[in-house]
Each structure stands twice: as C-alpha cells, then as structure tokens.
Amino acid sequence: MGRRNAIRPKGLSSPRGVRIRALLCIGTVLGLGAVGTLAAWTDEATATATFSAGTLALKLAAVPGGTLADSVAVTSMNMTGMYPGVSRAGMVEVANSGTVPLAYLLAGTASNGAGGLGGDLGSALTVSIYTGGTATNNGLAGTCSGTLIGTANIPLAGPLLATARPLAPATTEALCLLVALPAAAATELQGTTTTATFTFTGSIGS
Amino acid sequence: MRTLTRTQNFLLTVGATLGTLCLLTALAGILLGAKPLIFRSGSMEPAIATGSLALSLPVDATSIRPGDVVSVTNAAGVRITHRVLDSVPAGDSARLKLKGDANTVADTEPYTVTAADKVVFSAPLLGYGVSWLSSPAATFLAGIVTAYLLYVSFRYGRGQKSRGGRRAVPSPPAPPPPPAEGGRPRASGGRPRASGGRRSKGARGVAGLTVLALAGTTSVALTHAPEARAAFTDAENMATATFTAATLPAPTLGCTQNTVLLLPDNSTVDLAWSHNNGSTGATGYRFTTQTGNGPESSPIELGAATTARSVTANETSSAVQVVVTFRIYSKYQLWRSPLASSTARYTPSALGGLIPATLTC
Image (cartoon, rainbow over all chains, first blue to last red; front, side, top):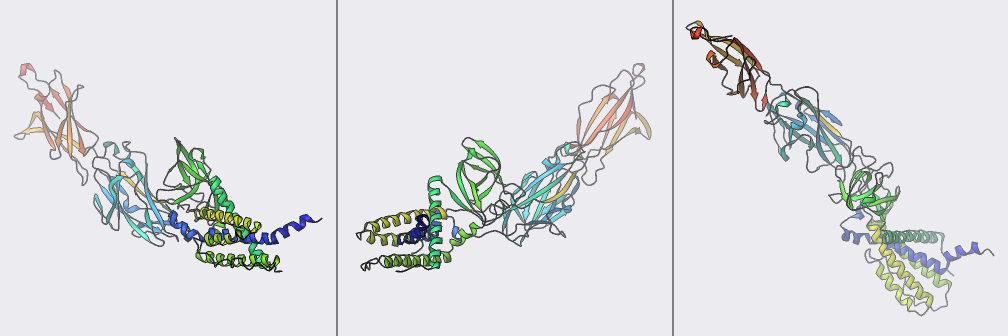
C-alpha cells in the first residue's frame, strides 16, 4: 500500500508534526536563553567561555647575559669551597613566551656527586627566593635585594613556592635565588658536591 | 492550504533535532547525572582536542582506575579534566594523581575526591558550537527563528484544517522570549487553546507544557557544562647550579725543643701549629696526647687564638723510654679537619732521680 513510504513525510508535515517540531524548537531556545540566568545560580560563567588554543611556553634565562631557553645553567650561582655559613645569590629570569597567561611553581631537587665525607649536601642547602631585586655576591656572602617570597632559608630539595606565581603572556619575572649552607652544617658534608636543579612548572588553570 | 517552504521545513527539522538533543541530555542529566563538558584547552590532545564536547557520568572515587579520564575541581575551584595516573583509595575517597595527555608532567596538585565525573564520550569541535550557542547573539537569533517557525507552523495547521472559525487562536507566538523566562509566555500561551474545547488541542497544550518543562531542565544541564579548563602544564624548565663544599684541611703541627738561655732544654718541648685555610680560618682546635700505645688523654679544646703549647717531661709517666704522640685538629663551626700529629721521645729519670727525665723532639 506504500504506507511505509507515506507515513514519514505525512507525520512530519502534518499540522501536528509541524507543530511538534516547532515546539521542540522552543526547547532549544530555552536551553540557550537560560544560560545567562543560570550562570548567576552557579558561579560558573559558561556564557563567556574562552578557548585556550594558544601555546603555553615557559622559558628561563640566567641573568645577566643569558638567553631564554627551556633549561639554563646558572653559573653565577655555582659555589666551590663552601664553608658552613656561606651563601651565594643568582638571578633567574622566568618568561612567559606563550600566548596565554600561566602560573608557575618552583621546586628544587639535588643530585649529590661522589666524594667527600659522604654527607648529603643537597639536603643541607637552603634557599630564599626574592622577586624584583638583584643579586650581589661579596666573598662568602651573597645577598638578594627585592622582596622575599614566602619563608627564608627553606630546604632546597622540595617545593620552593607555596603558591603559583601568575605570569602574563610576553612578560618576565626576575627571581633572585639565595642559596646557603647553614652554619650548623654537619662535618660529613666536607668535600661533597651536588648539582641543584630548580624546576619551574608553568600551567594554565591551576 | 498553506505549505512549508524547503527552508522552513529544514529549519523546523534542525530546531526539532537540537531541541530533542537537549531533552535527551536533560533526561540523562536527571536520570544518570550525566554532565556535558566543554574543553577549553588542549592538554588532553590528541585524545580530546580544544573545543571538544564530552559527556561525563559520575563515578565513586573508589571505582576510578588509572587510565580513566576524570573531571575534578581543583583547590582554586577550577574544573580540571585529565587522565588518572594513580589512584590511592582511602576509605570512600581517593587521592588522584592526574596528568594531561599533552602535558609532560603530572598536575602538581593531588586531588582528594569522593566522586568524580568520568568522561565516557567526547566529540571534537562540538564544544565550540555549544559555547557559541550560549552567546547572546546566538540566543537572540534562535529566539527570532523559533518565533518565526512557531508562527509559520500554526498558520500552516490553521490554513489546512480551516473551517473558518479558528481566528481565536491566541496571536502568533510572542516575540522571542527574554532568555531566562522564555518558557512562561509559551506555557501560558498554551492554556487558552487547551480550554478551547477541542481535545486534541488540549492534549497538544499538555504536550507543549511538558516539552517546555523538559527544555527548561535541559537548559540546566547545558549550563552546567563546566569548562574543563584542562590545565595545560608546560615542560619542565630547569635552572641548574652546582655546589661543592670545602674540605677543612688539617693544621700543620711542629715540635721544637725548648731553649733556656739559648741552650737546649731537654725537659720541655714546644708545639706550634697553624691553620692555613684562606679567609675562613678556624674557629678552634682540639689537642690530645698519647703515651706509647696507651690511651689518649682527654682532649683539650683550644680557641682559635691559641696556636702553641708547651709540654714538659713530668707530664708523662713511663718506666721505659717511650714515644709520645701529640695530635691536633682544626674546627670550623661543626666541621673538624683531619688530624695532624707530631712525636717526641720520653726518657724516664734514672739513678734515683740524679738524671732527670727528658722529652726531646
């Protein structure tokens, strides 16, 4: 009878089919229209979603004279012949070379070399982090001008920033890192060596 | 009889499809807790690209396994959707370690949750669509189009079944409803027709109200589509420096025979030491004496200013000739240097004391 062929067009084009479709359309309008109101209910501004298809790129440079790179050796901070109580300051420039705002955290690790009396130098070193200043090294004592971030003399091996520091695209922040061997350093640390690694992790959205 | 143009028919079908999709989403949201997620960044690429729309279902924390993609809210209140690296259950909660597929490192923050939204489906680009449809411009446009379609559809029906007396249908659907309260004009618009006497119209009114109610709920589901901002994390950037601790050198220790009126005096030796340690110097010294193979004397702690010491023969007691060993090390704070040593020979007194004991370097 051709019924199968006839039903669909008839159902959809019949007055009822057309009206039901029209009513279903309203559902769409409501779904979209209510966003503005609901955004107020939920704290989450979904109506103004911005997509971060941009790039996230954190770069570092040793200061002075360094160029931006993923990893840098801050030779100005190197110390040899450290005695208890000495300190040394070095500058690191943190740059947001991407196109989106980021926030970065800093953590330190230390890899101890062989030799010496077997002490764990990496665990003995402490760091203080300053922003907006310059590094000065005078013999056995280094100093950082600028503003101390967080607490002074925290263990080098571990998280060094309690809260992530925001960095807008195409901006930089100069950090001064003051590394010290405390006066109460154990005698087993004599002659030991360590390579300290300061890891900057930039992220969006956290 | 009025007919629909192709465009009208197409718009009606598209609108009805979208509306139905909204209804289904709403139903899934109500019945299953399903939640749509819009991906705002590409940290889960290539699995889930920026602008994707994903559907998530709530799961208990304890049933989350490594490899799942879950959506959680971080301490800053931002929703993060990442893959589970590690899940440590603790009671009915779990401590999740998450990492974006495109990230080189895991998220710095561990997430402790009792439940999370597990991504069960995702489609690229749809997130852009949903996001765009949420814009005021799209809402306005959709409102205009829908009003137009409603107008057309009811004119269509009236024309086809016209018996001349349908003029009483309450006016073409009102202008596009204000976004938030869009449902009300339509809902009230349906009532007069429902009471208009014809059963089919009443049924249609009820159906319309149902649709509107469900659509309203849909809007809730869609609005909840939280932006999974997906925390992009950059590669590790490292600044390195090397540090080497000094070794405190042993002091140099010398022994000289005491002299009296320019003549050697064999009863006393003079010990002198120096600490050659650049600018730091020493903060003190520690001195011991050992007679023969006997025990070491109790140590004598000396200040940094003391760099010499005299030892006389009568400080030693031994019946036979014996070697006396002097040892000293430098101190710097808690550090101590290796030992430096020097020896002298002790000869006891003889012939009942007529020949005195001697100590010679």
